[in-house]
Image (cartoon, rainbow, N blue to C red; front, side, top):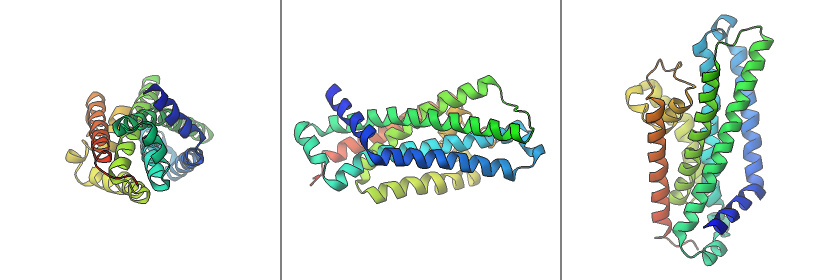
Length: 249
């Protein structure tokens, strides 16, 4: 298993898609934070709830890109057929999926930490430029960084599991984007009492970044972590089960 993990980490580090996704994420974080800082009035930006709302952008983007990294780690190999040599060396397919899930979680944690740190830094710089005092405390930032890294790690596992289930790269990427960027935000606005148990809302609860935005309707951070762990385990188990039942040729 250790050799398999090293192999998957090497693939992740040396794949151009990983660097491309990181570049897109960093650019989007800076752009979206800047747009929000410019669109809010000074009085609105001075409120703690709105500052938390902007930080929540990093949580959402980290979840999305961590899930995409996880999905691409397996759909890319299925699409090109490069997974065949891996399965010849490691015939137990569940071990391959497990290694991809673990590496996706490690990559997701790094993505989450990077996205949250950049979001916090960009917001602080923007507020300073506009002469607005930061209302958030050290506890807010500690929860943001730790919770963001943890939730993004789980989203990496969710993405890897979803990729193994769906198999098609376009379908997996499109499905994740539609759910995280369209479906779940709509559910949070229309039926928050149900949507608060969904994956992205759980990530927001863990990171504490959008509780002000939703007026305390999210679950507690601990419950959010449990929900995300359950989603990640379900996706990984489903992916491991189905990949053993299908032809990868």
